[in-house]
Length: 124
Image (cartoon, rainbow, N blue to C red):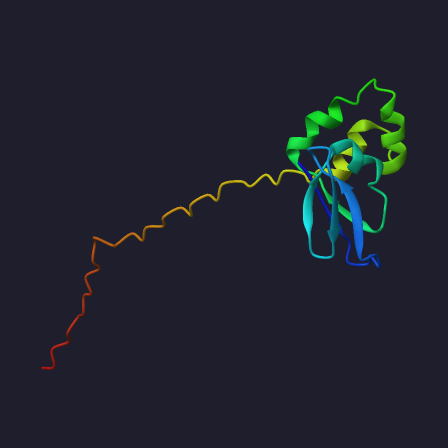
């Protein structure tokens, strides 16, 4: 689901956004709304707007393969391939490796004791 808000650098007071249910909504600084996917993609390079694409949008991007709209989308995003466009706008999944538990170190206790032998000299 694409969300959009006015960018921090935006000098406009409001902006008309086409939402994901195809209705226009006026947003102002600090407001975030869900935007129509194609509306957002065609406006992705506007400095006044800040878009957030999510993993759920990947199938929508992939559906552009072979579409006449693809060329316009790639141009708008400044990319040469669909894969490059997807990598640019959809955050990559962070693969976290499970932390391995530190191996328990055992200290060996000495079971043999050294006998100290002392020679005593007898003074005669």
